[in-house]
Image (cartoon, one colour):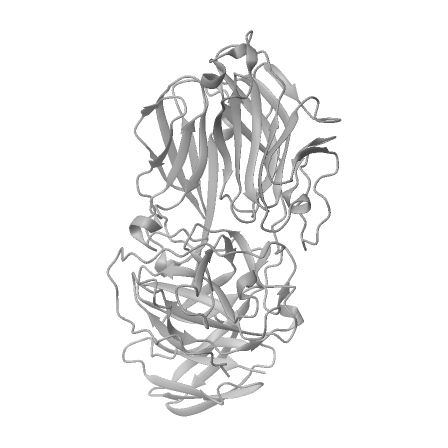
Length: 610
């Protein structure tokens, strides 16, 4: 039984919209300060290359570096243990270096609503004997709560003036590397007076998590270093194309189309790089399917740009795929570790997904909506008309057993003053212990619609899961990181424009598509069929009629298309027949049963409910 909520939503009319319809951009969701954060990603800094002209490892103290606090009371300090203990459910971890490092611990030392502007400044460094091409490298661990900005700067006049560059700004807090190796080209700044160089690490925020740094080195900037910074399988650009060209981790066969891969590259070397090319290799279940190479281009030092590949066309065979991006140039690259990235996706019968498949975190309401009913989900666009049979959702183990969860499908609003338009709900489902996931879990609940819902190609849809059971119950699992506007948290009882926000963690909420369930599949089929009761708990009787004597086979498949039961019913004469199906060995959920007789077959939908 579906639980009604305040009717701020209108039923959507299923009319096609023009391709590339632009939709209002949503604001980013304000997360609870002590909400769940993904564990730090273990990484290894690149190996040392080039001569080091200055090194500070903070092994025992700040070693002459000066902490200067311009705003607030939070200072830089030395630590060998990491951030102080807070009431955070998942505290910020220490920087994964030893034996000591510098830290600005805003989470522990700061106060709610209090702003900070604090710097860590080096002693004077004499680089007059160093070459002109220089960079500063350091290890960091950084997480933001709201909007921090951190900078690295250089002064050559005793700190009167500073040249600086932004290092972290609106980067989120999910899956940050620990440690993360950062490098900055300081050649032009040092050239002003190499004998009197000072470095500055500056943190600006209002009560956030903080910044940890270590292993600061000034070394040669490589002459030749083309780097791949990011890569995407598609050309998704919400500002220009709306929801078209979103990148998915699982595509149904019917919804897989051509892709336009692209990558962000940067010349991180001291010299211009000539004849730079991006190679894109598409591999499928049977091996290489396509390889494309861009035209050669020259990039000046410091140039960062997006290179788009030619279109690639996956075969559509069910299985795993990868797209390998490789950047190369005429010059011999001195840092080959950053020349390649690999993205993966899969093709399935009828599953459509954005998430990475294994639980990493969870999503609940924000601090300003703590008592509100809420839904969490993802936007999808179909390339071909289809139907949605069910919604799948994974739940984190913090969800209490007995919580009620439902699925819903909407069309997104075209103005900021309208809510998403409801198309249909699934039935409610009561959560059991077997449904819950610890971090790393892969269990999904399937929430069927009472009747398949028709969906139209090119129309975006919001597919979500939610609850009405209180402020601390449902914890929807997340896996992976989403670009802005793809993943959404929705408060159905709040008036727009404060009802929808985008989130950067990817909800494990999926579409299960189907085709014509309950409809005759072969024109002129010589039979008809139905079953009762439906839904049922243990057994149901399938009634069917044959026009001619035929051998009859019964196949039962779950919502993912997996066959769970096959029965040979033998040769049956023309006329009426009945077969009692025992469903006690099958799990609760929605199934499709197919009767095949001669050259005809017919499919119907049944629901097991206990």
